[in-house]
Image 1 (cartoon, rainbow, N blue to C red):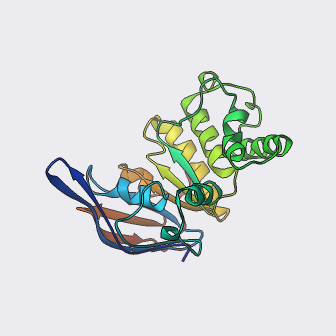
Image 2 (tube, one colour; image 1 turned 90 degrees about the horizontal axis):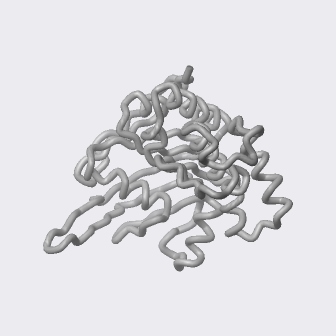
Image 3 (tube, rainbow, N blue to C red; image 1 turned 135 degrees about the vertical axis):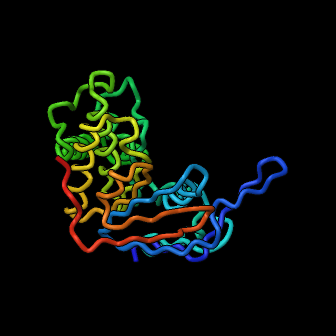
Length: 233
């Protein structure tokens, strides 16, 4: 398994209230899978994604990612591991407004110490991969919402991560642009990328080959498809 959770728990204290966000979750996801996580607000799906992305640590249980026991890493080593292994795509794009598309895509490599010429070469290649080779020097306010999300996907891909995590990646997009972005995710999946996305939209989840349903901190359904993923458009 590329990712393995064993009896993972996460609890938060809010005033006098204890919230059990995850309750002894077991989960295995293999390389090359495309998985959707669904659940109501407060179900634990966002906590699950944060732990898979190493943005949060579990209180109990074990998380293995690409052969590494995440709990064994201190904060600095974990940040370096995250930068190399995980690509993130967010609903709000999270692009720096004064930076060009290429410069935004370069940022993960800047933190990783990649030399300037190599950063630019890889950023251009990533933007070409998502169909924005002609928008290298455009700033976010010069791009449509769909184009901005493509820039964020290029940024997530530029370090060649082992897994791509997407949190409501189409939540800020109209229906036509959603189809285009999901087509891109499907293309990446067909190329072998492991993709895990959180969505509240059933139509978006249907693009995945596997749908996890989370309720009250537990995975209550794990639906797998035999057929190939659909293609948008």
